[in-house]
Picture 1: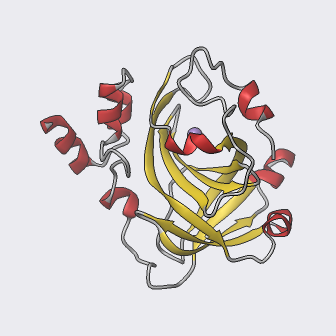
Picture 2 (picture 1 turned 180 degrees about the vertical axis):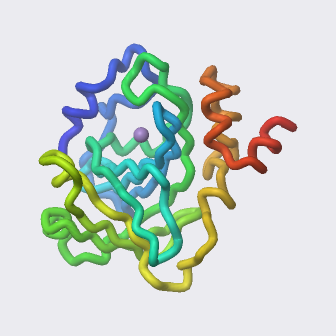
Length: 213
Ligand code: MN
């Protein structure tokens, strides 16, 4: 776990994202969980789980599903600094990941697997989410992707059966920011991003709401 790749990809004099210099390695009482909705070249949801002083990160093209029969592809990406969990705003278009970022869900998480490092190594991490939107038991399972690099980085995010399981599409029913309640187009408008590109990532009903504001 290291922030080298994260820092190598970014120019901190140009992007408003945190550099991670302030990331503390001391142990916290509870572990940070966040999902950021990110309209970059493509829309995706970034799941981040605090572990070992960084945020382990997976990019989920279709976002999470509450339906235990649905497996969502989650590509593991570079570790992010813990303070990234609070980042909502616009990354300049020429920068890595350029586009609009929303804190779609946040809270804490707890491992269900006995040894997280062993679970990550084995490719099956069971955990409980205590978010504003996502709750209950989940699993990340490493899967065979396409190509040599994908083989290590392709995972599936699956909801376990519990009282929080549902067939409701939570990405559509609760599209707004967990911290500011803005839609993606609102964030783009207020922070100098590409409104047209982000509006297509909000649900149709949400777009109407955003226009009225
Ligand atoms: Mn992203």
